[in-house]
Image 1 (cartoon, helix red, strand yellow):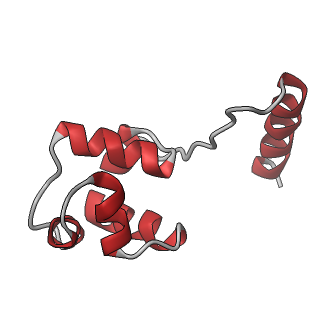
Image 2 (cartoon, rainbow, N blue to C red):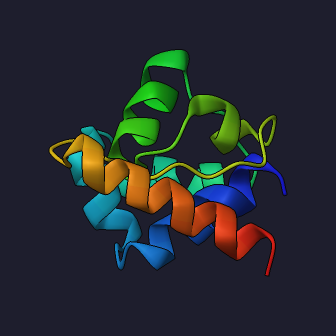
Image 3 (tube, rainbow, N blue to C red):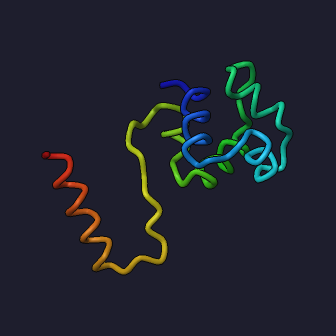
Length: 93
């Protein structure tokens, strides 16, 4: 999946409009539209901000890494271990 499709997928899964995402990033709605239409590519700074908004890596956004990430900030080490075990179990399902 290329950047434009991945961005649109992440945005819609997050329930954000192009305008809402643009406002979070401090850019215009038309820039988001250009990204999703593959007419422009984001600067490194915007790419980093997008990764932070969606809690993914920049490599994931660019299609270099197929793994999705989950933000575990504020979760106890015990609960992180449970999440890892669950993920591993689901992989082998």
